[in-house]
Structures are given as C-alpha cells and as structure tokens.
Image (tube, rainbow, N blue to C red):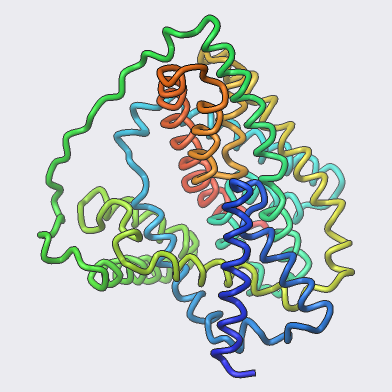
Length: 385
C-alpha cells in the first residue's frame, strides 16, 4: 500500500472520530473512536499492520511531540492561576488524591507498574500518555502501552457524567441560595511587554514553528546535559512556560502556526501507533486493571474533594467537579460549563451568570490537571517503570 493511501486512511479515521466527538459533545471522544475503528480494522485484516509506519507520519509525529509539549507551556496563564488559586489547589489535590490511591492499591495487589502508568494518565490524559509511552516503547512494554491507551480512552466516560451531575447540583444550589456568589467580578489584565518579546514582524506561522523547535531543541540538549534526570518532554513543557513568560514564545502559540490541526493529528497517531500490534488477548488482559484504575481513581478524587471543600469553604459538588476535570480537560470543561448554564438557568441573565461562574473555574482546573499535574507526575513516574 502506498504512503499516500495509508495517510489518507488515517486522516479519514481521524476525521470520522472527530465528527463523533463533536456530535456527542465530547462524551465519546476522538481517541476512543479511533481506537475502536483501528482495532476492528487490524483484527479483521481490513487494515494492514504497517499502516502507521507506512504512512510516514509515525517518526515525524515522534519528532513533533516536543513541539506540542513546548506549546502546551504557552497556554499557562500564571496571572490567572494566581487569581484562581483556590481552584488550582483543589484541582491539583484532587488529582494527587487519585494518583496516591491508584498507586497504593496497585502496590497492595503487587501490580506496581499498572499503578505507576495508570495514575498519571488518570490525573491528566494526553500529555502524561505522551511522556509515558515514549519511555515504555523504549523498554518494549507492549501490555503496559495498551493499558495506558485504555486508561486514556475510557477515563472521560466515567469523569464527564460525575462532573456533570456535580455541576448541575451546584447550579441549582446557586440559583436557590447562592446568588451572591454569581456576582463575582472578572478582572481585566493589562498586557505588558516582556524581556524577549519580538516585534510583530516575527509573528508568522513558520517563525512561530521555528521558535517552538528552538526551545524544544534546547530542552533536548539540557536533558542530555543532566543525563536524562528530567525527561526531555517534561523539560519541553517547563521551558515552554519559561520562554512564554519571557515573551519569546507567544501565548497559545500553536494556534498561530497555521498547523495546529495537523500537529494534533500527528501526535494522536503517535499515541495510538501501538494499536497495530495489540491483540484481543492483550486487550482482555488489561480490562480488570483498567476497571480498577478508573474506579479507584474516581474514589480518590471524590474523597480528596470532600476534604478540600471543607478546607477552602466551597461546596462539595464544586470541588468534585474541579477534581474530575483531570479526566477530560479542555474543550469539555468549556462545553459542560455552557451546557449546564443553558439547561439550568431560567432566564438569559441566570444563564449568563452561571456560565461566568463555571467557565473560568472549570477551564483553569482542567488546564492545571491536564498540563502541570500530568506532565510532572508522568516525568516522575517513568523512573519507577
């Protein structure tokens, strides 16, 4: 099969999966649909085993992962995180609670690796999966790679319904006796020039890509210098934050490269490439660890959220919703906030107030867990595989 046909097949599968995700408002996400379609194709023989490698995107996708992690650092708004400090702490503690319980149960049943891999992915998703898969492929851990994909694929199926239920209860509470909380003001931040900020002449798609490449390459060089003590991809994320704060990298720089869609496609293919070598027996062997990880992780978030709710004087429902954002992240955090506001508010004023209340909190919580927490947890976890 020619490379262009292989690439086209992958693009069509990705496009169909994205359509399903949009139609279901993210409940059935892109990764889940791609995984199901790809596995059906490989197991029935419709798709060739070398589909990913033959398309030519697998190796390029691995090279592009560093740029993606670097760009992720430019989405971190430190000023907003300071303003929403309670949300940040509640979300981080919720994710930590899930990780601690998952690892504790895994050690208890003498399945350490399942806990080490499952915990960071449950607490963050794609970013953690990228870091862990990179390490597991180097060690040829096929079963754990399949398990990692399974956690990534199914975590939002349990996270979204719980967060939705919690947010709906919180919305009813606010409308009944918490309307003063809906009046909180949103402060406007005045942008200021940063030390390494370049002129608008340098704000072009290819220059932005080149800047991402430079910072990713610097991260790789630094990782070699410290003998891999900190994983290269984790350093990409850290330096992405630093060079964004210095002004060298623009905020949300990936959106300005005119290639974010293609890069997202390539990185997704990298995550799912191991599906070609996944057998039905391997999938069956990870079902029980997957179920345990999802249930235990959810219990960890809920228990921790009950404590943080009391500690920071917020409702249990809001704390649980913030904690569960680790299982789905953006844009589902935005979609849920908008849908809950639209379906719960009786008037346009109430709907707008609810959306203004939920949106910044949920987006901030999802951003913190899916980026900061997951990348650092994964970078720490790979030392114990």
